[in-house]
Length: 47
Image (tube, helix red, strand yellow):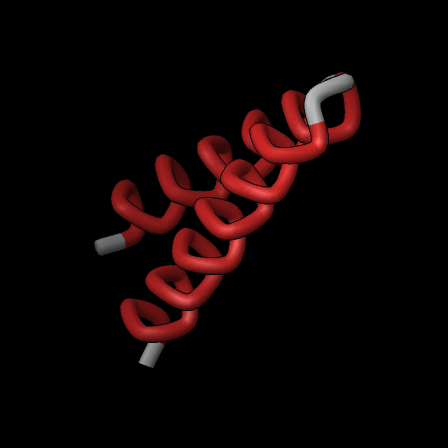
């Protein structure tokens, strides 16, 4: 479980970096949705 959370945290961080550097608004919105889902999954696994 700890390794899963580490992976999801690294994934969320990379997605945030990609979103910040993205110039296409639609792609940025898609990335932000993925970030939200990833963070939700981290919260679920932490319980």
